[in-house]
Length: 537
Ligand SMILES: [Zn+2]
Image 1 (cartoon, protein in one colour):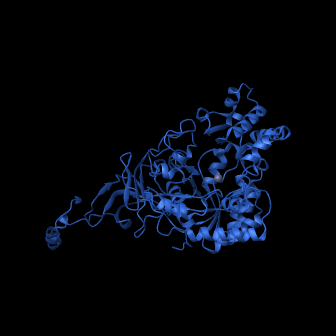
Image 2 (cartoon, helix red, strand yellow):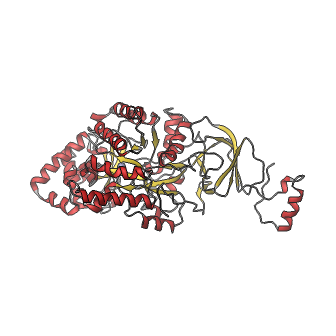
């Protein structure tokens, strides 16, 4: 029988018990704050699961052993379920949501205990005020940041298509250095977006060198994930190689039917780079649709130069609007549009919430137009005119998804956000990424093993950003733990009904405190700010 004493005891009683403990160990005060018994421990390293008990003291894993009988303030019987490290998500857009929903239910209910922000070249700048605001807000998950190359360039040059002067490059280097000293884990880029798209490779390398010298990594939403995806992977590798730092293709995918299958070649490029010593890795979300703004996805980048005023001016110039309509129609046919206006879904339109969740073809019809590609392109321009929407783009092949998932250098990252439950029609990745891998791709389709999936969600991302004390279940590590039933774990969120929480995760522990159990978030807010390797306190 296990001992369970959670009540305060008098000093005299403790002394008495101490004296008797050799003969009456059951009456001892708790040695551990929490013991998880009867677990199948998947430790994060990729090693096969093993049976064991795990004890926590404070925020730390104090012991793992076949059986732990010492008294504990709290015992959780895992009942043969999987006990894994809390999952670490290197690519999130959680920085708005974390203040509105500090419990980050959509993530924590999947077993995610650490969120990294500042991806795609977009971060707060400077990052310090954001981190201070976060430090003053009790939140559930741990939280860290990258500094964004796009934000840095926007600050120094603006959303303009031109080369930087030597003086401007110096200013940008200083901003990256500042970001690293404030606690960033590296440099992110979004070379697909404005203003990242206006950046020559050599300029990114100059900034990557700064982050690299300070111990950071480079993580990139690449310039082109469609017909130019191979060149983009080459560029990402080159930036790592010449910048002298680890480099990561983030949310790796191949967009547009005509390009499906190219992951065979992109993965070869990664393998070749790794063979010659370039530390190149990948992350991915397990869906065949992407999500970003309608304007970034369906308009060419030249149309977006100069900010909203300039974009509206172009839309109001008839000759330019005609040219844009043609280019947008081509993008719908060959790239993000997936060849059919109804492969484009509106996720969130702040100016008309009734459009949330609707398909572009249907919206076109609703405006009294035949849902042709041409007319859908016109509707897309109308949407940008009105203020833009977030969109979902069904244009990724399942074969590429599975091939990338199987690659040993691929980890899992959601690219999601913290939605307000029931509001808008966000991509389901925010609610389902991690459990979808465990349910669909491990249990149902056998694409990867359970141990490998957990590795891709814990030890691998932890090692990537240098979190030496998280991501593995081992004595001395911080106690971030997810307990789930491998037979029932699954995602329920769909593109039609995204606001549905994960199933099958029973307990989530962050820094030693239980944050989720019995289907409910607890009152605990144990999340901490995580700082990168060059932080100057
Ligand atoms: Zn991205």
